[in-house]
Image (cartoon, rainbow, N blue to C red; front, side, top):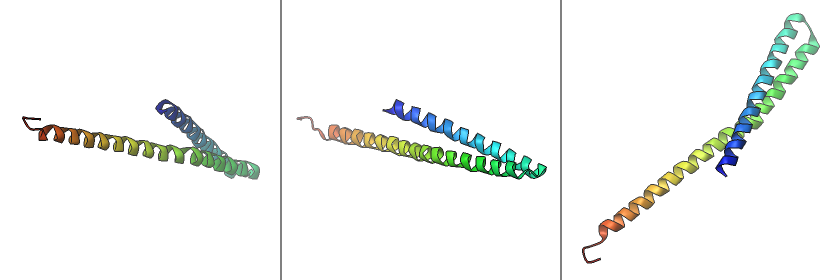
Length: 99
């Protein structure tokens, strides 16, 4: 299960990176269109920027939330293990010489 989760995280990170690249390409087209006076280039650049931004949001938000969720689960498991070890240790200390 953890391996599948890590693969999914990797895939989302790759897609978010592609979205960032698409955004930057769109920004370059926007700037090029502004300097050349080419309106279709400006509009194409804006379209690519928003497409890239959408890809980043669709992939980065679940990636961040999933990472936070995994961290919370790991922390909770660690706290539970400490609690169990403490109870077991206390039980062993309470045993008397006749037990």
